[in-house]
Image (cartoon, rainbow, N blue to C red; front, side, top):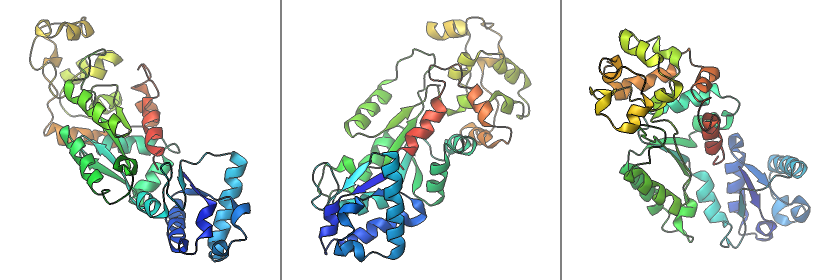
Length: 326
């Protein structure tokens, strides 16, 4: 993330303490990039007061971003106008961590950690921010996502601008789709409206849920369930995308299910398929996601589960979307 610090900050002696604080936040462990129009500030008293190490870093930043013609993500100015932050706002905004809100931060975390581990160096910034405590996984869970965001908004009441502009979070949720063109349920649609109104970035998974991204090879590591696993691995990639691994078809015959589900699985034996019931896996919600920690998982095997999708680059896009906030 690139922060532009306007030259007028250097015209105020009273602003020096805040300027130093902001530079320290940005410089520590290379958390953010900073751009300052050095030709305009080098002769100011406030610039001359900076430590030599700060000056060297600011000079390096100036040269790099001028050469690369990088566009700032945020601007900090003395007056803190509508489209920019004041120093007080900037210190509050940039010192807070980014919250990555999941439906269940414990159970869903292994999926994201598998992405972060296997898509290096694309995920390099994410890993560094998470290591330093600047990126935190937060449990939402349905209406809990709205509650978590509302709680964050309350903490900004004393700041001057419309408080959603101070939010730093990203929401990742399952689609819960049972077939490709199934519309999102009312709860998901209401959540999207809530997030959109508050300019909160979000991503809804293309597949049914995070478990559906588990590479096929990992199923070979599961003990028991031989018939189920053999039948599951025989499914087409798209059928695997929307199959309920935990519950299967709920013990029902295919002929009794929604016609759209029947169409998706039309070539399966309607009565005797092992997929009628889900996998036998103790404490599924808590334990099954841990399979994303399996050592056989690689970037290649993860991509094999998305290459047929409408968006085959979904996993990379999730990483990019999160990285843009850091």
